[in-house]
Image (cartoon, rainbow, N blue to C red; front, side, top):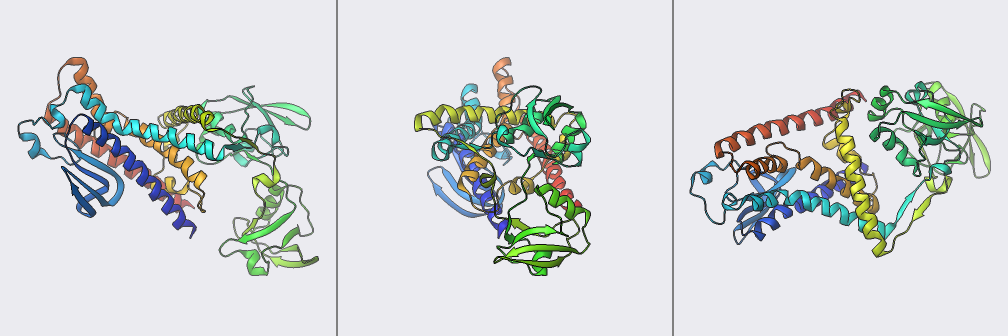
Length: 443
């Protein structure tokens, strides 16, 4: 059920983004009296799931969910309609419009995606505000893994500053380190300030999901809310609502200490003491190979820490939403830049549809859904404006060349460029989704 909910959210989000993107092209084309022959959600090679002809335009839904398209008369696009291009230009065709009109038509999708992201952020801030964990409220310090330990971080460290700059939102610590190429972390440890250098290898680890910095959580009270599939604890007789007291008579102050004990004793029988109905009960459990019992805690982040919520009135939410949109664009451009860095090796973490779909939660949360949709709208806009033939940015690149030089590239050149661009895009698609498959095989 969790996977189904993720898939449904991903498909709904993708559908919204594709429709808005193509609507941008459609509206600008109509504004300049350019004929649009097709407006499709998803691609329709050989057949479509639904289609309806209204006026000059056929509206439809394809069966291949890799995006969508509008087919504009007199334009060399993914349809590769060469026969139309052999005919004399008509007044309603794309090729008959002025260069600046064609430029606006081609940027319409990107503009609409940016505007959609801004609008979503405005409405989300107005409806829910913004809730986060202040770094100063992570009172138990941090918890990290072996990659974090390798650079000198320790569980329980309290992060004070990054490059001697205060970070207000705890969850922005990792993005700040990665995007801004930070060099040092200042932490409080045993009442003393410790300066920790950040080597390039640590950035590489973060991009692969290692070395994460998370708020340290106290262990008790650990009341079981639910079980994972094939849970060793459930198999041993544990019930929902049981409270874990100790393992092999060892009591824990912090949750990471509990995890470490399970890891050390994986595949070994341990004595688990639980509290149930006012009584203590002993169960013998063998943790699964990763060192897990397959149980989930009732507590949320809000139950443990004091969170901060910023609330916005309608008129306050407008500049705040726009500011958040521009900040997200800036952060994504920094993230995109890392892909081409030989030091970060971010290309190894490039993901496809599985990676994108996995970022959606396993339960339907509208606030999270709309925030992710806004973020994906910005990603779609940035990716489409890249100067690669077959993308909007490729068409824009050739149009800018025409504006500057006064010469239009030949139709034959544009055809070859379109084919080359499609080869590049399919190669990137195969690479990204291949990375996803490799990650699954390595688990």
